Image 1 (cartoon, helix red, strand yellow):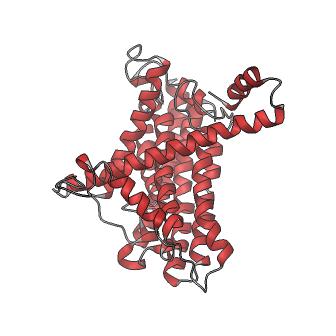
Image 2 (cartoon, helix red, strand yellow; image 1 turned 30 degrees about the vertical axis):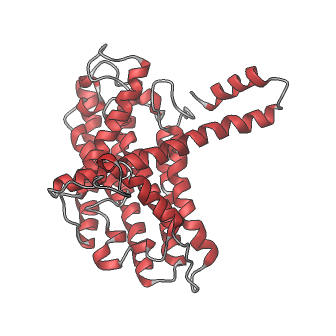
Image 3 (cartoon, one colour; image 1 turned 90 degrees about the horizontal axis):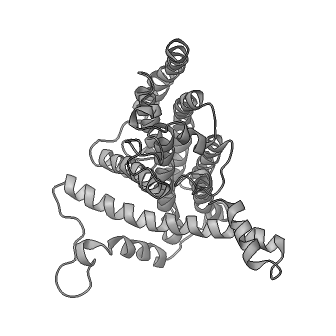
Amino acid sequence: MTVDFIFDFLTNLLDGFIGSDYLLILSMLIPCLAIFGFITIYALIVIYAELKVSSFIQDKVGPMGQGVGLHAGKWGLLQPIADALKLLLKEDIIPSSADKPLFILAPFMIFIGAFISFIAIPFGESIIVADLNIGLFYILGVGSIAVLSLILAGWASNNKWSLYGGMRSAAQIVSYEIPAGLSLIVVIMLAGTLNMQEIIRYQAGGIFNWILFDNPFVPIVFIIYFISALAETNRTPFDLPESESELVAGFATEYSGMRYAFFFLSEYANMFVVSAVAAAGFLGGWHSPISGFMDSPSWGVFWMIGKTFFLIFVMIWLRWTLPRLRVDQLMNVCWKVFLPISLINIFGVAIWTVVFN
């Protein structure tokens, strides 16, 4: 379901009542509202999942509704909603020494970067907002907006802890974008396209046709991409930009209320984006693991969302299992380990493809 499809549908439905310019605006607005609604519901689900998974790992029960009076509902299902309302109702404080325009802009800018990435993500065989020929390149490009946003947040706060967090974040994201991008070059080499839907169609025919199992080099490529994606989304063990034990809350130290909530929403949105790219690029996207089994377009949505949520679960699992790295360890792993291995993988995949295919 693309913008063109919605525009044609509205044209047939409202032809003569509304001008074509307004119909075009409406056809773009509807997917935007749908994406925002999806991100909001998805964030509430993942926050609840994170609370429960972390509690299980720590041998606790997590949020539970018990006793009489106000509580988090049955099984604690209302806890994410309570947390969201708490943040939205908090006082919005802007430090007197902050650069006010940039301070206000930064959280919305980082959310917009995550938001517009969803435009090129396929949720099913025919469910995508814009089926771009350069979809993969587009997602990588708009994802870089996060770097500018976090530097803005750190600098505009006029707080040394915020600035440290912003600079760490910039160094970390820019560094790990290189091995992540080189890993996706392997996907482009094998599929022969940057179009997300075409990359998924290339993997039709069951689990052994997935790019992950194409040759011996690709599993290493996938691991490097996934770890780099963890670093790009500032997830533990790579959460150095907001390490509480060192920098209070890093780039978000001076933020409160709704602006603070936008940083959290953006983090969870970026988790979905990088996981969806991994699912589409390596795990067959909306294809079933078994050819012909539950392989209809409606089941395709289930497979795409299911694979993406599995990778998000792994991210949550790692957060509550591994300790945080030091800054020097973080950069050493990127430049001295991942970068050379990624380059070797590109040559290895190219040679393997020429010799054995």
